[in-house]
Amino acid sequence: MQRMSWILSILLALSAGFADASPPPQSRIAIVGGRVVTMAGTIHSPGTVLIDDDRIVAVGGVELAVPGRYRRVQAAGAWVIPGLIDAGTRLGLVEVDLEDATTHQDDHTDLFSPHLRVTDAINPDSELIPVGRLTGVTTVLVSPTENNLFSGEAAVIDLLGEDVVDMTIRSPAMLCLNLGLDPIFRGRSRSKFATRMGLIAEIRQLFHQAEAFDRKYVKHQKELLEYEERIEKASEEESAREDEGQEESSESDDGEGEASEGDSRKGDLKDKDEKDPGEEEPEPPEELDRDLKMEALRRALAGEIKVLVRAHRQDDIRAAIRLADEFDLDIVINHGTEAWRVASLLAEKNIPVIVGPINTQPDTWETLGARYDNAELLKRAGVDIAIQSSEAHNVRNLPYMAGLAAAHGLPPDEALEAITIGAARILGIEDDYGSLEPGKVANIAITEGDPLQPRSRLRALYIRGQEVPLVSKQTELYEKFKDRTAESR
Image 1 (cartoon, helix red, strand yellow):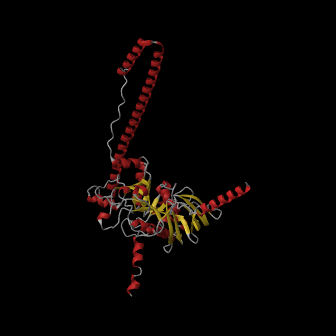
Image 2 (cartoon, rainbow, N blue to C red):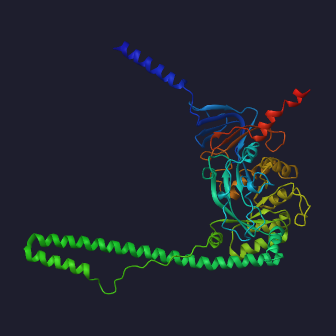
């Protein structure tokens, strides 16, 4: 008996060994040995990040043991950081600038287009998406161009997915309102307005129209709710009457005989044919005519969506703040080239700024106040900032924009924050993105060297826990032609 027990224990041990020898599941990954910069207040060097499926399950230093059945990814000598977030791009809306068939970033047919949604135009197979990922960018805000007064609703997407629905994190994310010369020039060409005064007056008029629409919308929702309550009450009363009738019929059957049954049937017929005086069927409210433009503005007025305001000059920024105060809007300043001039006001009003591109030059009438330390001056004043590339073709330059800000006074950790957790906060996705913490989406970049420096190199990239091939049309062309010069000699 003891011999049989001993043999059974050996067999169980061998079977467990064989099970442990099988390859770990692809969804379980342990990134080990790197300098883990969590962007949540801690740095582990060396550190470990555990991924299960599309989420981070644990982050720690040497004290964090790697459980069995996790595939190890060696990151020794590298930085491990959250996937970078570009808070201003046209990615997926344009492929070739000079080919109209491939550009869907600007609907120039209507100055007032708040109801447009970029998710209806993003191309998930754009060749520019793999290019943008090559420096560690995993998540972007996509918005239309800035020529219309209201240009549409932006969306936040991850740079991986079979289709736009799969890629989308938040849509609509922001309503895009544009101040300054670009919409003025277009308004002038349409004989709508020709000055900043005219542009702001038009915006104010549109918001007042949206307020009137909102009053109708709120009234209709109230009437609809009251109608549904009346229907529910009538249904409950009808059920109660039916239950009462069944009880009376049962009592009658027990002791009254045929005459009683006849009287009961007559009473039932009377109940069906006659209604109590004043009892009427509830009437549904009239349908509210749909107005997609006003509905988009109504969401902004109700605080359901932030308003991204394109403004370079300080007078445009001040005008945006006045509109926000007048209509109780939750605004974010886009570009803010002269935001440094009104930094204290922005901090007082708790209005964030998506700065950039950092290398904006003083080469137009609107950007004469451009300076490379804009981000640093805003941050020092207490303004929440994010940094953008404002690109489609060169989203990959995002970390270098942050590096340029760091070279002009912004502390490097705050520069990295502006393209990770800081950007996530402004975009409203900080619960799932922007830092390496348990429970968050596993968007992770592994870089050889400081990620803000041009000489750094991306070693590996994970989006939603999936390792992304570090290839693009450009790398394919490089591999194809790199030896041609040597062959021709």
